[in-house]
Length: 470
Image (cartoon, rainbow, N blue to C red; front, side):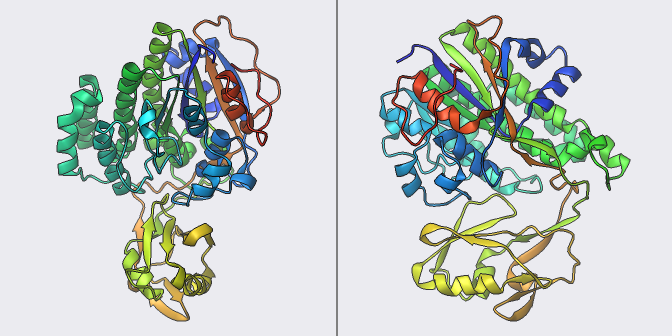
């Protein structure tokens, strides 16, 4: 096995444009000071559908969505894990000391999880289990906060979970400087109420402290860390940061002025992460840092989103579909989607229900995957308050069907959306200046075999050839 270790920082959906724009806006940042020391590689996602729960499995498993078939959180992974396991499972099975922190589709935990340096599943895990056990305290808090702020940011903080987190902070590695930063954020919300939207970012700030504690203690040969906080800001506030990208911008200039620095704010927190990671790899030069995005984002819609349709009472919705409480169970989903598992005896009836499901006369999109998994595409925007739905031929009000027309606090929809072009930045403390990056974009399917080859692990025949990166 190569002696060089790799830290794979998964900076979800961030394109090189955002990296370079931030460097221009913050020339004193760690990113601006170190970007010239990194190989800057353009990547290309080959998938037919561009969503992070699809493009990250492609990067992790070395096959695109036509083969891995992953479309939603909560799908049964047993078949795909057997045929096309993620990189961390392959490395761990070959004795490579591996750590996983929040990578998508990392739940359920592997049976041999005790052989991992650390393992914390993604924020769509249905339960807070993690390894070592102390990570479960943070994951419990993390999952609760993620559920509460799926679309609008909640002011609520779970009392019991927060108390448990407070008690566990020394062991988790949460720093005093992080608590001071959070305190400043809470004070700023008292002055500028709208800034509570930044709470989403602080989940990653806390998580990074926890991750770095594990890195310092365990020193794995390979580790991942996933964060969505910049991607979340780009989706919502691209139109504020780059209004010139839109031929029809329907937001007013007061909205643009309020939110124009939110992507930059999210990147500033990443820059804090980067500063610590670079210090870590320079102090431990057997490590190489990879920063990957799996795909990118670009300008999409300039239309304000005043309301969006959600399933807010899933029990009532399923009852309207003719299912009892024992006939189904909820699965984690990225709002506004709704996902459920349906018992076999009721699946045919539920298919018929979904085929009849209409909102204001328009059919609702849905998909069925293996073993009774159903995903329903809610999220219809700017509906009239008198909107009605049709289920099994019966007209119902939204509330009768367990639905709500939720007001969106910042009126931000997907002002940016997914594009196949992403990035891979490679920082090697022993490499100065860096080798030239390839001219052609790197297919993200090549990243997994490249990692396996680097660690001396046989590359499965279904994967592509490794790339000369490590």
